Length: 271
Length: 271
Image (spheres, helix red, strand yellow):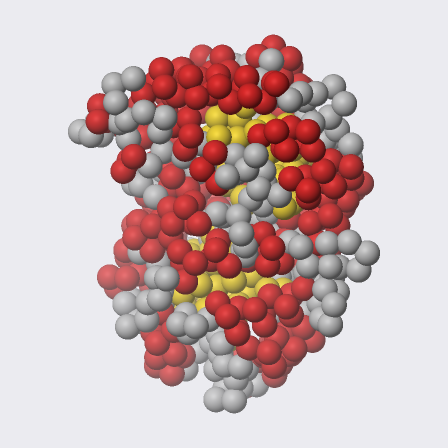
């Protein structure tokens, strides 16, 4: 089954558009993990097990693992845990890779073979040949940055490149050219709902990964109304900090589950 | 000493603008490493020791390590080896990172603290706040993609954003705004010497990292003439495959040294 098929199945099966972001920051961990040398893995595993029933996808952010010695081993075990215990929930490795073709081949091995992710986030700035080694793995997903959730998204992504802003040109290029095998998706920040609506108009029913609700301030209703497809899906609405750190007491896992369920229900009110 | 000071000293001391790229691909290793479980580290260490006297910088490409289990441990030992044995040669971690601020902070820890690099390559697509956590580490270097060496560089980097192409806007923004602490550099592909000349005109004496000579076909004379600063420096001209795989026989280290020396001498003819 391809990433896109797995995602579409999961949207239906879990009746959820919630993507659970796994950005483990030891400074914010519940007290239970203070002296746990395996805390990166153990905390994320508990969050995964508590939230899986409300999740259409998990999105580990590799930077939070790569900041630590042996962090990659924890990430590898975490994705193996998800694939083994929650095999219906796709894993998107958030890595924002982008490099010349020969290097991109190595990054594709990293994401898909070493870590076993179903999809990976990619930066399109270096163009078509930098994406090709990922696109060719057409059972996996390629989730390209389009219009990101941060303030700096305005610096270059919104520059007018003729008849449209750069982020729209990128959306159009990916939809019309790079997506020949139907394995592409885009990152569009929840903090820019107007831009989200325009992008949905360009890309048809291509899945969109939406960071920026919760800590970054994006509005759920505007995201769903502007971003959903005709069948009320099409979105992976990510929450990381709002779920992971819902409580730092002994009830952290239950609180995470409640936060994921609440977000799912809030989203579903507008679908 | 900052990255930029270390680089300027090294240009003078070694009389060299050669950056030795460390892209270890086991499929291309000399026969001596066939059964060596520590080959990633051992091969690169031998190349480093053989070529250091001709190098103004070393540039390990993290993807070639990240494609392997425990590859990061090999990379960490390699950079520690360089810092310990060749302390005058700066290390640029080629990672092309770029993410929202909170994630970028983690990537800065990865590059500068975990791996001990003097500088890191970065993707500017996500804008100012995605660069800030790196820029703030102002003893280290931030090497931003501007106009890359691959064919796909034309897809988005050359789009006209009004009075100039996107890559020029990025060069200008970095030179005039992001470089307040003088710790920025740019990536400009050797395969686009005309664009290199324009960029040099925009950024003054900012250092430029130049991939694309050798296997990718860039012309050394055009690069030096179009890219050098008034004092005949300003460039880190990278060669990876042309040095690493100069021979796959028992003389691989000597052949790598000869290739690095030849490139240095060829460059110096045009300075």
